[in-house]
Image (cartoon, rainbow, N blue to C red):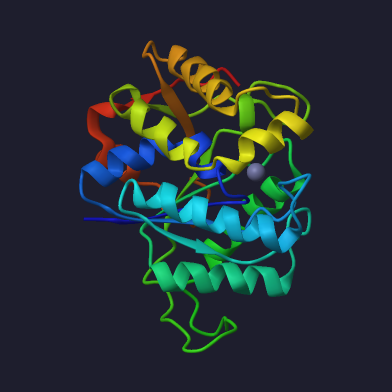
Length: 257
Ligand SMILES: [Zn+2]
């Protein structure tokens, strides 16, 4: 069984972009952790940062529990995720605590600055985590990773980069069989319905997720899908480990760009 870390900026990002894939991996018996950089402290127009953060940590833990995953928060703050030295060391701490063979994270180009910073931090933390001389804060320090983990970027939100261009995946995971579970995981983030209506003008975040998951599925002719890009640049592992774990549920996609 593999250890898999899904790490994204905010509570609900992993559920929106990879919840179905995580549910499939959980069904197969793999060990899953969902981590966020922040507890979503800006996700309310009514509650204080500490009040909404407390609610959202619980929502994220409840969503993770639906697939027997654990939830961890790096405890940075919304709109304050930066690609700097102390932040990278904190991400390496999470990697060493969870010892993943596979890491799923944010797309390099996405609509939110925290998503883009998270993506770069995770990419570089994967490189640093096996190096014994790279030190991390906190006690007790966990052991360095045995190797750089297999790294996969999730789709950006709505499948588009910052300029609005479609980001084509390397593969689309058919999540049709677990779509109800994905919807249930996202519904655990109940506080976000009010917030997204207030700030994003999205009337129902569940329907929005359903539409974007359906659009990703259309790329490979399935009802619901989630796209990923495998980061294969030297010296990151190039073997298709996630694809092998997912078997027929993972459909290759020939990028045109
Ligand atoms: Zn986010």
